[in-house]
Length: 384
Ligand SMILES: [Zn+2]
Ligand SMILES: [Zn+2]
Image (cartoon, rainbow, N blue to C red; front, top):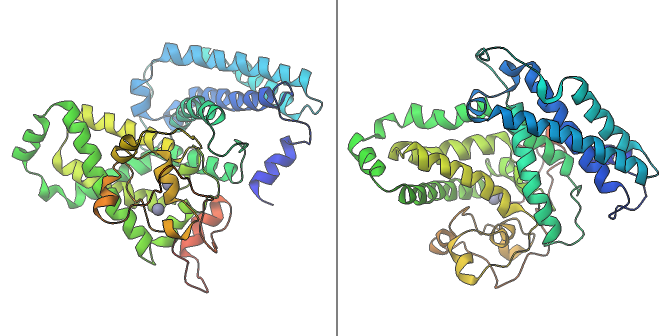
């Protein structure tokens, strides 16, 4: 049975999900409960479950207060759901998770001294932080301005995409290492100190825009290769297998897709030697922008904005099921790259009718999709 169906069997029922039915309070309560328990676990084994880079910048008093607020809100919403809803699974789960987090110490768990450094760690804190921030921003946006009306947060494949989101954040150490390594190992020779000094002497805004441009040029090239090569396509087909788009759908990326795309995109950024300020600002921007362009948000932008920067409508066409949109809109920041290289598609104001791959043989589920590109196949994949 598919993971979505299994979760639905535990928590779902045929009661209404409208406001006042205890559905929203229940699901938010479970969400907050999971976040709270995760945060508490991080406090118990910080050396193994948290990232030193995240630890270095997180203001702990704010984190501790946030954990207490999350526990309190989780408990209250769980209790509200228990009152409103006939089936009590969601409410009980939310209350139990919040109570477990509180009894384990909540945001007040002390730890003495500096966290010892370990050679290997997981980014559970990185996962929880991003999940909280992105969900707070994008779930309301998709509810207030949905492109596909009536599409649930729990649309088909949501559980699979949550696992992608979880694994990619948990393995932050590995993915950072693999992103930096190709550039550092193979392109050290390409560094010219004079060029790097000239790049760094520019205003930060200019460097930020240049980061966007060179990264997008690299991304465009690799992305097009992923679509054109019959060896690479199955890895990227996993990303295109989503049949519904939302903020979480962009997380569905095969590990080979992530490593090759990020590793090669980082090469020009490394060689040009941008200042850390503009570079980090770009990394933050790209991570939020990538989520935004997949989101189920119907915002209409003026034509000039759509031709300057990639919007959800532009990237939704990249995922479109329509034949005329196949192998179009490869850019992730600047649509002019597709216009320049003859791969632009975007009929004025229109959105795709659906998303996915024609005659897709990409299976459902994280594990099946992990092995899908390397498993023997009887027929050649339909490149879309
Ligand atoms: Zn693609
Ligand atoms: Zn995409």
